[in-house]
Length: 322
Image 1 (tube, rainbow, N blue to C red):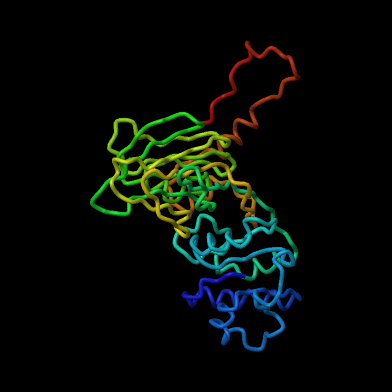
Image 2 (tube, one colour):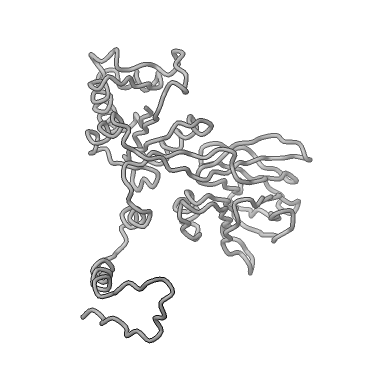
């Protein structure tokens, strides 16, 4: 269990979750610093909580629960990305696209965990490699996006972008993103990129404030490789960020390679609601006036199924609903 201990509502929710799991005989493993922060709320539950640094192997755990916003969930992903352990996000942030439940649903979450009544959805990730003169000097991964940004506010970056071994374009820009479908609703969305359904495996390339005629977002296939080089004309440094959490300096002549990740993030789901509903709820999209369900019910009642091979060219159209 990982908690945003800077929020009292998060630590309250975590204490209630520990108590519910303890009643079912389930032990919770927490980081040592989280236990210290929550000591008052965990009083009397010494056997219900174990510190993560006391020799407990990650393989001994069957689920990771994260209580916080998307930033805390991305921190939790660092723990489980290379394992088969699914991650269940409990939202205490603003939007919380990666979260599956709200903190007000703790009793329901306990029930789902105890009875293992959740499904697991796998998400596409990306691997990031930084090379200098062909030598690998840094590598990481991203669940949302890798961002290449200028380090000096007064200067632009000059980058050359290559896709699948061929040059694509040269941009003078504030930076650029290579995002996953999961990240298409995060930084890339704010930068004008499209929303990509999480069931699609793809790479999304989004230039940031590029001074160029061709600077549209691009959706690439999952096996594509994107290479970005900081060219000499930049006369400045850049910074490479993975999910806004891990970073390194980018200097002239260095190359960043981005490709499909070796591991997938496994997210636990408590319901089967489609991504469309999640998009509508998280962004507060207006859908009043939608009559799709009623129309399908009327048309479905008036339609007569035909045997395979039947010529329906002369059949009259069913009456339209009034």
